[in-house]
Figure 1: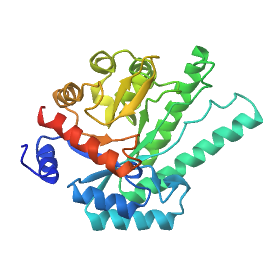
Figure 2: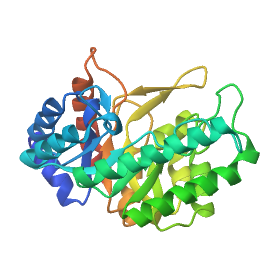
Figure 3: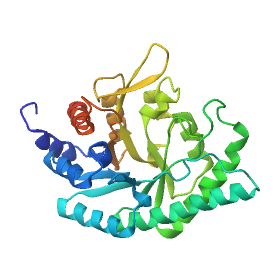
Length: 295
């Protein structure tokens, strides 16, 4: 496979039932530029977060319809629509300000439903609330968080969508262990996980794979983010190109296939190479394909 072009190796990856994607604004905020990159490398899926320097849920619907036409013209499907839903501090209970904050989140979710439908996906990325970094998560908040996530999944199910909560540092659901607890607490068929092992590491998980992954219900992992990281001398995590860090991508991909994963594995690069997002994404894509080759 070493002599094959990048696009040929991507076709081989599809044949191995690993469907690869890149978050478009990790290439360029201009969708046309991002789609040209995806087509050049033979990718058939993408993930959308920001378009033209704005979060997709803040764009007018005519721009979203334009994006759908561009996706169709490029022959690229949207794997998941990213939102910032519930990536906010937990609204205060029984207060005017808390009620307004929560209403704003329900309005955001409704806008996400509209945009996901136009863009051709039924899968939406969400979160499970944040806390102030210097305070840590409040254990007493989890029952209410689970109730609100349950409510959101009921709304999604009624509208014909599924929500995939992403674990992210600074959130009440940041690590694999917290993700597993969420999935046990909220059994809705419309709720699953966007599994991001690198985020779990950044949140303090000493072993996101295999131990962290093995704590999860694989049938409820509906989307997967890929990047790479290095642990620094002070214990923090810094992002780097796939294959340049310490995460076991080969093992994670093998485990996903073993467990019957049918979703998309999406590159969310999160760093720049020589100042370029596109160059960093291309570098990481090549590293990811090296891992795919060993699966």
